[in-house]
Every structure is written in C-alpha cells, then in structure tokens.
Image (cartoon, rainbow, N blue to C red):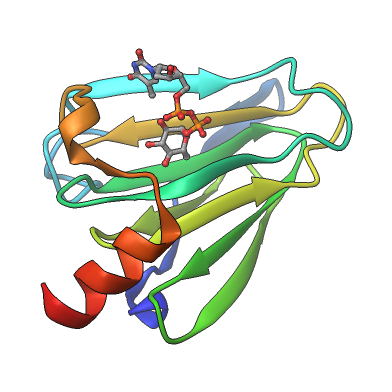
Length: 135
Ligand code: T46
C-alpha cells in the first residue's frame, strides 16, 4: 500500500567543505541497483509519471531542488514532497505515481532495481485498478 512507501533518511558524511551521501547495494539500499537515471530540465508546470510498475522498486531522491510525488495503491493516495538530498522515497512495486511541482533546476535521481523494460509498466489507470483488484 502507499503506507509501505517509506521516506528513508540517507547517511551524510559532512565536514566544513560540504556533504557526501553514499548508497551501496544491500548496505543502505534494500535491493541491487541495476539502473540509475535522473530527470532534469523539467519545464515549469510539467507533470510526469502516470504509470505503475509490476516489479520495479525505486529509491527516488531530490538530488537538487524539490518536487511532489503522488502515490496511489488503487484505494488510497498519498502526496510526498521531496526537497532534500538526504531523503529517499522508497517506491514499492504496484504503486501508481505522478510527479509534479518540479522546482526550477531540480534533479530527480532514481535508483532502480531492474533494467529498463516497457513490459514492467502499467500505463493505463484502468488496467492498474484491474491489476490491483484481481492480480
Ligand atoms: C518512474 C519515474 C519516477 C528509457 O528508454 N529507459 C529508461 O530507463 C527510462 C526510465 C525511460 N526510458 C524512456 C521510455 C520513455 O519513452 O524514456 C521515456 C520516458 O520514460 P517514462 O515514461 O518512464 O518517464 P517518467 O519520467 O514518467 O518516469 C520515470 C521512470 O521511468 C519511472 O519508472 O517511476 O520516473
């Protein structure tokens, strides 16, 4: 459910010259990272997402700036505001997500548990509801 999508506090190594956050497979991230991508140059007012995944798990980080994620498990919705590089949103499988309110210059960094395949996407909301109801 949307309640299972936790906000995880990431470790920070900091000194007077700045911060480093390190994520390592199966140490502070609960899956093997198979893919990394990031969204940037998102125009003001743009909305992305609008899909679910069957299997994919993700850690989403606002590497710069801020944005909103709307999570939906077919019954409940939850809005999560990400605005700091030491916080990750763990998106579990089978969650519909939409992204909006990207601040200017924001970077949405995603660490993903699987390689890219279009077969893992559910892109029609009615198919998603049907999948959540009937499996
Ligand atoms: C998600 C949110 C947070 C690829 O060719 N390879 C890739 O690894 C990815 C991620 C995308 N693409 C292509 C497929 C589409 O033609 O890039 C285009 C846009 O992809 P998508 O519709 O997935 O974009 P977003 O920004 O709506 O969603 C992305 C992730 O794909 C998705 O898993 O949860 O960010």
